[in-house]
Amino acid sequence: MLGWLAAVGILVALVLLWPATRHLASGALTAALLSGWGPKLSDRCVSDPAAVSLVCKPSALANYLLKHCATFRRFGTGPGWGWRASPLLQTLLAVCWPSASAVRFVRDYLQLGDEGLVALDWAVAGAAGGHKRRRTSSNSTNPVLLVIPNSFGKITGNVLKLCEVALGHGYLPVVFNRRSQNGTPLTTPRLQQFGDPADLREAVRYIRYRQPSGRLYAVSESSGSGLLLSYLGECGSSSYVTAAACLSPLFRCQSWFEDGPPWLYRWALLLYQKISLSRYRTALGEALQVDQLFCSRTLRGVEETLFCQPGQPGGSAVANWEAYWERNDPLRDVDEVAIPVLALCSQDDPVRGEPGSTLPLELFETNPHFFLLLTAQGGHCGFSAEGEGEGGPLWSHRALLEFFRSTTDFFAAEERAKQAARRRGLGGGVGARGFRHRSVSTCKRLPTCSHNIHAIYSWQRSYTR
Image (cartoon, rainbow, N blue to C red; front, top):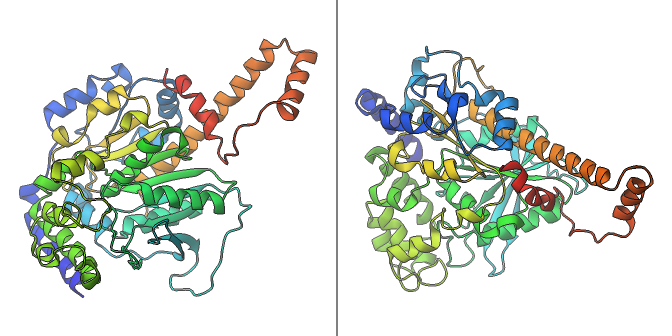
């Protein structure tokens, strides 16, 4: 009931405050974007509601994406957006508004090495609330889509729609729920730090054990991008992920916790987090000062109370706030990321803050593994473009699925070209047949990997040239 009242209150307040708080694209940001990559991008104006800017380092893969991803070229059908012109309404409808979904979830609890629990919710077709438990065969070759919600554990309408769309495209969506979040029991007085990928690493191992024949893709929403980027950076070429995408990610996370989003969003996030943690007030009281926790008025105050005190439930003690972010900054190991990563952001995102100071454009301009799709409008995790039918897939969902398909096709073409070059190098004819026979019977095999991540990693020089 409190959650519904909060949502209604926020909706009314934001609608009233919308004219005074709308974010407009800054000229400095537009100049920075359009100066990065010649005529292919210079004819797109990020102040146009229907335009999309791709910010990345020029490469073979980037050219392939521009050619094969229709969503990379246009966001909507025209400037007449109506309510879609409001980033506040877009954000509320995506994050707070309840969404009717044609999917239900089958939950698996995964016990971790320290006896803690995380939950994996597998999306299956059928009416919500069904009781029949249905598992997917381990022999299935369908790709798996690992969905990481925001760091507060809120399962938004955006996540539900993504699971529904992914099911329709043949994916097996699975939602990762952290300790204590979304009804997951807290069996140890330990919570997951913002950018600690240890629990996610164990979950990925389980997913690969359960679905060994399917490729693995990953999507994060909002602040959940901190966990996904931390995982990809720490694991590097051993992440077992083919490609990843971040919807409205937060990059400058320490600054975001310190400065916070606008007060209405900050109030809503604080309320939701305190309601979620109140369920474990007694258990957490043995490890931290719960009175201080529930009296905190800032997101930083809650995070510091949870993880920056002696005996805190996040594992080993963190000396102070700065040391906490040295360990949890999502970009701390960004140079080790070895797969393509797509970030979808809007310039008018009211939660992330001003794009000029919160988007690390230099990362996308210099690192060939990162791609930024930037729209003029769309809010936070909204991206509802005019021309889309009611109940149809959002532009952001279509974009990330096109990105996954195109990167997979690109790597397959590269591998075919590589094999053809090897055959030509052996002179064809008998030599070629001998090579094919030897590659099957006597060559040392690479470790079993469902989506051939080793071949992808070995070809990173090709797609970053």
